[in-house]
Length: 332
Image 1: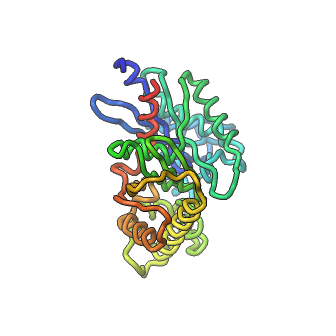
Image 2 (image 1 turned 90 degrees about the horizontal axis):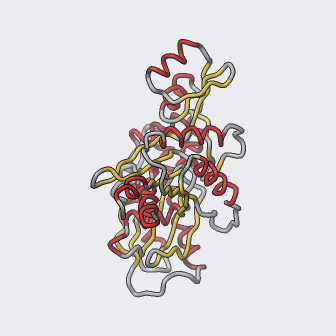
């Protein structure tokens, strides 16, 4: 591949919780991430000037300043409010009028640092298991936004992106799982061909909102606590940690039961004697002990297919973006 085409290829994981950009840098990969959220703060000229000096992404909307991306967390915490989300359960948020405009600004802030406008591959979720949800509006709208920014655009299923990122050694045969904020995406791939894809709507946001309802905390603060300090080790004296443990367990159970149901009902699974490797990725899979808990529940469920080498992705937060980049590079 020509050097300039390789350097201009981009992978973009557009997730409910975060948007992650992947590109080639030298002999390796480079990632940049922004929180897929925003918050409104009162307008003042001083605040506007300070945000500009600090290079905090923001826009002016009448009497408000809208801070988007990573800094929205800090301001939401200071103001004791939840951040607003551009996406809900993997798709553009239908209850948020500013969702598309804010997502465009977040994506633009990431892409502003790229040098060339080449091939760009972005992730899209699979339909929830048992539902024929129409994903056309979400995918077509994002494709239009990225085309307008000057890129040659393609899309990839998020679970398949995990396979492309992590399973080259098995010729892209195996099961990729992305445990994100809005959804858990699952894809079974055979020699790089996706033969079964679905999503489960219980993921990180479900854990946050359920734990928030029990403890009286804001979901935003629950998420920060979950990301900073939660781990699996049985019963917790702290109520929030215990609530997180309970709902994490429920999420994993829901994911494994959905996998069992989907595999049992599918006629498309590859007929082979070789067990399928499983790779788990995504920010919701990061807490210490997650993989052990997932593996225990998975083995107890006795899936109707043989699995092997259940492991965590090498870089769980960036796996889907890396897989999207692999697809962009292959098609550049």
